[in-house]
Length: 157
Figure 1: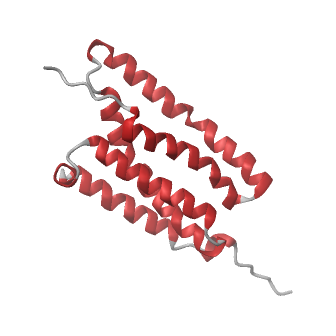
Figure 2: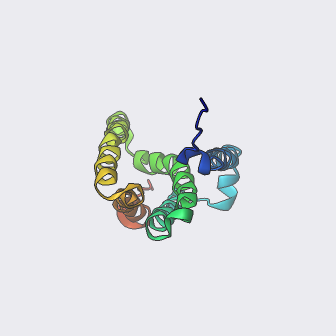
């Protein structure tokens, strides 16, 4: 009796996970070394760039042919990895005595992000994995809006 071997879909794109991990590690190291302060001195600029990167990645995942669209998940992951430090700093700016409450609300909002993956799962089952990424577009659009004009940085005189 001979054994049949099949190649799973995961083997076809096995190079993507290491690529995503290397890209995230590279940019995390760059930001940790403080190069961020030389490249983009304002956190809203950093958020603007990372939100635009993630938004471009989500559009490319949805609207390019399936064979290459999976490569653009890297852009989404890259944008997400860089936006959290900028989001946190902008959200906590000048809260004063409300810093603890603001921090708690931000952590709650992050934990509440379990809703979007569930929505993606329902959409993936209904219309396919590639079109399921349409759930990311409004999320990244809101973060992009927040980077441009949705936040209010207060300065004390």
